Length: 177
Image (cartoon, rainbow, N blue to C red; front, side, top):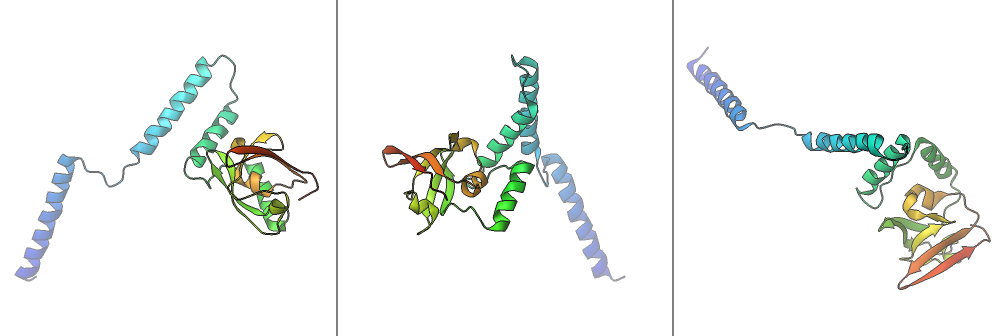
């Protein structure tokens, strides 16, 4: 083994040893998921308090589902949580290509908002306009609906309360869509 190779190996070993020692003193971590787990422990503590201190017996699966809805909807306007049944229903609608509403919809302020109306589609025929915000559809608040439910349900009518500009108006197109 040549002297040059020995010096290179020794220098590399010393560098690795130095980084290990310095890293131990500085407490450097390669990956830190503590923030996510800390938040999970907060959820666990809140759930524990709800179970023990809430006046009525809470429906824990509904509480967890609500937490998941909130988690995903807080990511961005186009994310939403679907239960297994909702996802199965969504996949069935998307594969048969039926029941499109004729508009691009997103969530704004928690409500369904029309981003764009497709010319000649059911939404245009019902008088829906760009930037309309739907507070409810068929009596159900859009805050409680996923985007899949808003945009792909097999509805035979478009009944809801839309806000456009400064005035609210009722939509009622029972003719089909």
